[in-house]
Image 1: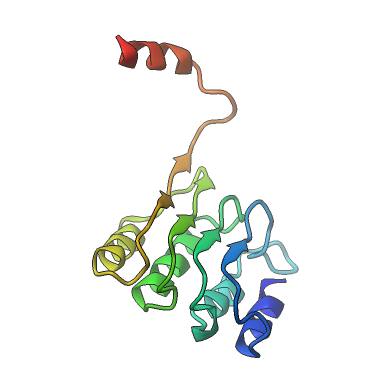
Image 2: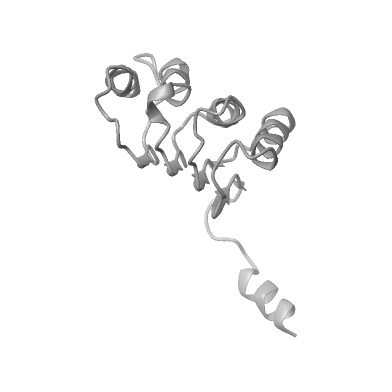
Length: 140
């Protein structure tokens, strides 16, 4: 899992990795299906991933925990070339502290120039009613 990838990164196993997609899986769950972000934290805070430009952690099952780990990694300048960050989770959002940490780190130039940032929280349980109506209203 993600702990093995963190070990490989520390052993210079992925020196030129530019895109890391861990989306739509349960990479932060332990054997008891409980959230464990220690491997993700070790991975993202590794000095060996300095070439990462795109990071996708959407729907990883870790909720706000992944958001905090992302924010800490960016703030600590471990992802200096990051241009795209997607860290959204259904029914779970960045908490205020994690979002503030992330925004301040980006504003301070601790990443590359961001081209994509997705920290959305999809609270819907399926299709959003009235979506077409909202689009029509905004065009009028």
